[in-house]
Amino acid sequence: MSSFLALLALTTWQVAADGPLRSLDERTGWAVVGHGPARLTEFLADLGNMQVALPVLGCALVWALVHGQRREPLCAALTMAAVPLLVVPLKAWIARPGPLTEATGYYPSGHAATAMVAYGAAALLTARYTRRAWMMPVAASVLTTATGIGLVLRGYHWPLDVLGSWFLCGLLLLPLCLGRGAGRRLRHPPK
Image (cartoon, rainbow, N blue to C red; front, side, top):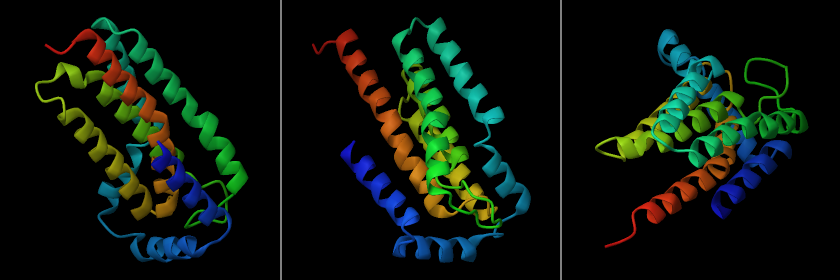
């Protein structure tokens, strides 16, 4: 938890204070923007849209409720609800311009945050019902990473916008991960 907090604080400070990481971030962003097939990178960026990510989480919530989970779906829904409550004020406070616009409010990335929490929470809710429980978190990580790559390559966000969102959402998802492990230990005591 302290690692996510420290990385979020460092990233936010560098972006807000126009530090050396921000300069490197912007050079890197300019170097990669527009690379990759436009349709593919747009598709990847769209994975962070609420219209795409929230139905995935909604299906996982219903699945978990049908299978008798109560606390975990509530925690996952509250975690998703926390995303705009944290991201929107940070965007307003930092007021970072985007790569291809003078408009502000690009740090942290709301799309990257939505993708990480929606896919991550969905993976945590459904992993216990798969033969290989590790596959769901890996799939969520791939979707989250793909979203971030699409956002940067399309020029919608700087790389640090995406990383800042991931650090923030790592903090948000950690209690869900820890609670899931504690609940499993309580239901399945060691033999």
